[in-house]
Length: 102
Image (cartoon, rainbow, N blue to C red):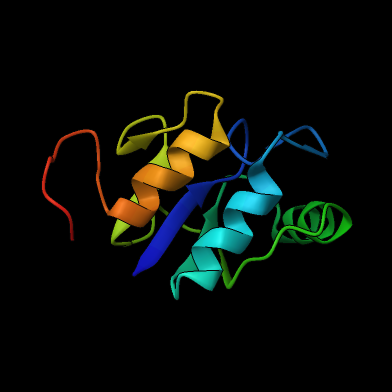
């Protein structure tokens, strides 16, 4: 699956990774999924912050909201500040609107 992850307030705050974000991205990729980062920020800034914080990713999207299988943001798989719980929901393929797995 392609997992879309919002950049601001989900992965990082400013230029610092949020607790658990790096490990979550590694776990998602190790499970065979692709990570697409989306944001309204400039791509160069996003790349620099991701690389500085050693956060793995596959794509950076700089247009309208991308088409993904699941989103980690404030709506689909809502990020509530806990990457351990969020990663569990991603790997189970559960959005907040569905009780079935993908």
